[in-house]
Amino acid sequence: MQKLNNGNIKLAIQKKGRLSEDSIEFLRKAGLEFESYSKSLFASCRNFPLEILFVRDDDIPDYVETGVVDLGIVGQNLLNELQPKVKKLLNLRFCFCSLCLCVPKDSSISDFYDLNDAKVATSYPNSTKYFLLKNNIKAKVITINGSVEATPVLGIANAIVDLVSTGSTLSANDLKIISKLYDSEAILISNINLLTNKKKNALVNKLLTRFKGVLVAKNYKYVMMNAPEKILPKINKTIPGLKSPTISPLNSKGWISIQSVIKEDVFWETIEKLKKIGATGILVLPVEKLIL
Ligand code: ATP
Ligand code: ZN
Image (cartoon, rainbow, N blue to C red):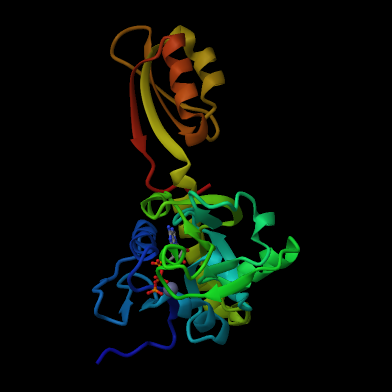
């Protein structure tokens, strides 16, 4: 049987579910090499002193709080619901969803103020009770584990509080959103005492640099293009790059090749401007990692 090497840092991720694939993909993008058979409890990284534990997501906050593992990847929703004493290290920008209050499409309830005396089913009782209390609503909270969306049809509840991402489960069950409690995404958390362990702290910092590199890279695209030399001042203004774009001469006289990075949020705007001022053969590539 494999044994957990105690000198290494331990990271818990979800074994099977909505967080699993994206968590594994994120770690691989950060250059970590490991096996991920769904049957094994943990995997050792081949190229970093890290053990990855595959567990149920609900157990991760507690494992991190009690020091069973040093790090974990969980949804912000679980942190809000369970309020574990852990440190939030990084928003990981995947597994986006929202905790929403929903009612059947034909319900007479159209606002959360109509919920007085109603029954609300949820797997998030603490978040729900806090929301009701904050809005001064007296409704009964029924805690259900799984298939919360079926409770209105079954006559168990008049409304539900559940996680929504695309909304397809809602429409399949003839439900509509009437209020949003909060947004969620995957979060990297750590044990609060981790910083007191010098060796582990140094390793976690190394990991954080890699993780941030993956996150920053997501926001940029790498572009190459050809342009007449005379439009270079205009190009410099349009794409400042990280410092300034890289310029190299082309074989045809008066033409240059330009390489730079463009921020994702202004990507199309910038490409349109570049075309307009005379750039041609614009080639766009994804950025794998970017260390600023
Ligand atoms: P486990 O067996 O590990 O307890 P689970 O059924 O509780 O799994 P999943 O449904 O796989 O968990 O959801 C895991 C996490 O994925 C959620 O806590 C949430 O952060 C995120 N998530 C993203 N979109 C959704 C969604 N539409 N519904 C539920 N969770 C979502
Ligand atoms: Zn769970």
